[in-house]
Length: 303
Image (tube, rainbow, N blue to C red; front, side, top):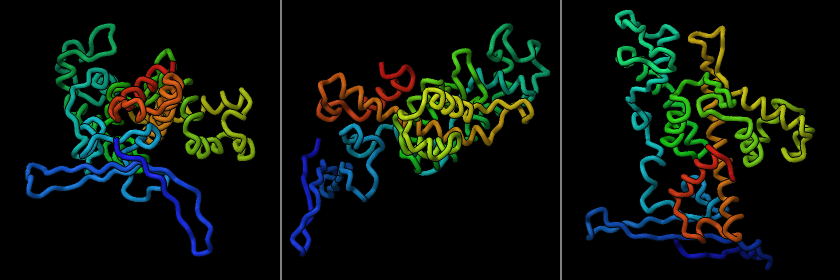
């Protein structure tokens, strides 16, 4: 867990700075060679300016696992680490419908009757196109991960789970885009990620109005902002190639990363509320479990 540290600075004039707190963890690792030990040093503090700690660790008051997070919470050094080769059925069906895949040899036209999925023949024919499509966002996902701190592998997994990388989907419940955001999901993003709100709000409302903060807006203004956010990630486009606006899909990757960060903050608040005002760190909840709680929050809300 590390040890608590309180620190401050005195000046030559006799005054001092405010007092700050931090949590410092030093762990030894020999990497299989006990004669040449190495040390991992992790610091959680609002004043830390060194190598950034794993995302949301400071918010939750927990340290990531020694030596780095598990694979599903990792951000690789290059896009090859994100490459996948998964036969996504729903994605294949959409590519077939848009004429990307030649299914002339399939007696069933490559699609299952009355279904949103591809047939076995269609899935086989679509294999190369499906591989290309599911990896086309990798470079952007990696860049967004570096900018926001959201683990790149988890962000890609989220898109795979929610939409199979087909960004034009709008389900009857209003689930939209690569990450299937809803009106309630947009509410979470705007409420729990103030920096994103401050950047997005002036694109829709006046700067003076936005200065009131999300909770300070009139109900109609909040609804307009949520609608605009959901619409901004909807890449459905009747006049675009394949019916998809790829520029809007690319933009949405950043939006969904900020949405995950908002859910990271709300998950911390849920733990605080239900535990009698304790942080995840005080409750010995692990870094990995807090990300799982965050994904639950993303999927179903704080209830």
